[in-house]
Amino acid sequence: MRTSDLVLVQGITRTRATLDEWNERPWPVLGAWLAGSLAITALLLASVWIIAANTAPETSPLLFPGLHNDPTLDQVGFVLFRNGLVLALHAMACVAGFIAGSSLPLEAERYSGFWRWVHDRAGKLAIAFVTAATAFSLLTQSFVLGMGASTLAEQLDLSPGLLLVGLMPHALPELVALFLPLAAWIIASRHGDWHQLLAATFVTVLLAVPVLVASAVTEVYLTPRLLLLLAT
Image 1 (tube, rainbow, N blue to C red):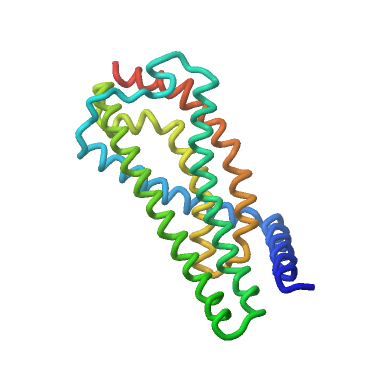
Image 2 (spheres, rainbow, N blue to C red):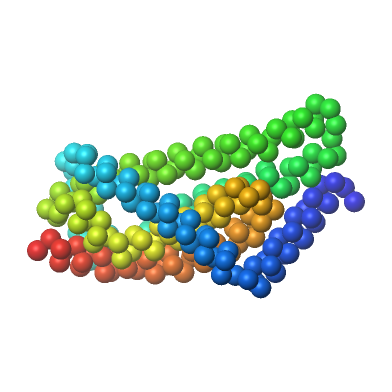
């Protein structure tokens, strides 16, 4: 059996063992992920509020799904597509962490000399790249959402804080679901449990998808009514 095949088999075996372990005691794992995701969500929302409160609104109007036109399922689909891209990015961070922290060290054992050195360093470089890409994504989301919130608050004659309150029914569960894979990645990296990240990818995505569907429906059909109610 080739070393690459052995790495794949060991990865699958570890993933199955991790899933079996979590199935026996799911709540400590889910609780840690949820707490981590809530912390990231709170940090992002605070950043959005600060940016919205200190940024001049755009002169061109911001079109919010279901607010400036009748809500449709097409708008729900667009929201799901947009959030699906973010979820995919965070899920890929988990997969990259699994490959860099678990699979590459096993693959490196088949090499010696210079190539062994390259494989040993590749994992750390990959982890650093994923960390930088994730941080860039969060910063970008903060600025984009903050500037959008500033513009929408001006259009509705609301303070940025009150606008965020009106967005909470869909934004809070949506963001928590999106950040579940990222929370799992952070927790695993702190404890060196890279071998658990492939299992974490499957579980967090399965948990996130139904929440994102419900949040998208809420964003298109219910949030606009709440915003108009707050604006009156």
